[in-house]
Image (cartoon, rainbow, N blue to C red; front, side):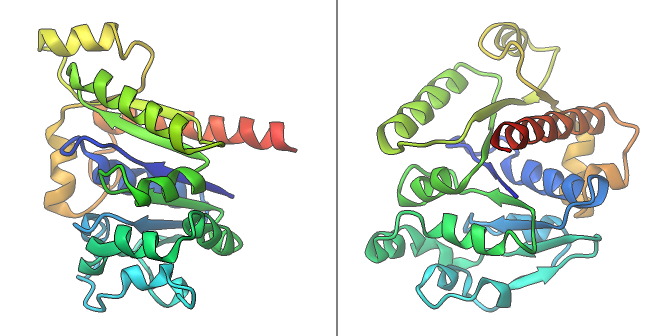
Length: 249
């Protein structure tokens, strides 16, 4: 079982698109029963998968003591891939979690679901608060998409400080250089400097088409450089999880 959180405190870096893509690869290509859990109040993950809009307004209720996450999990049109969609109730989740006072509630919920879903991909909101504390406590791996700009260094430093200050145990971080355009000098400087060795996801019209088609890129542009880069990222994630499992065995 592994919980993979896709998290960034910077908006507009393709976080939700990446979470959906990784969940699809986990389910369809790696053949794991996979749950995509959307914690972002914008609710983009289910929408990108072509799911109907959630009308229940109950997504935050699963964090209550008597919450029933299985009642809100829905299958998608892709084999082995299910989704727990977000809705407007998630806007007040940080307040509710602070009131509940259970800092490992998300960890307990993911552990309870792990028998059915050995891979859980979490699309995280871009916040540093009670929700991010819950995410750090639950995640086995943190995927952090960052832009090719000086802001990337600042955001990564903030995240590392927050984790070290609030968590005794924290997941490994895998930063990803997102929306990279090799024609831009600043992007190249970040790529060869701060982001040297990071996985790279290029700026691509094919990735933009995932929102138009409401489908993962591999379903319509498997030949593209962007898809190959995303597959390379997923392969790296699988390798890290396999190494972790071997060490834990």
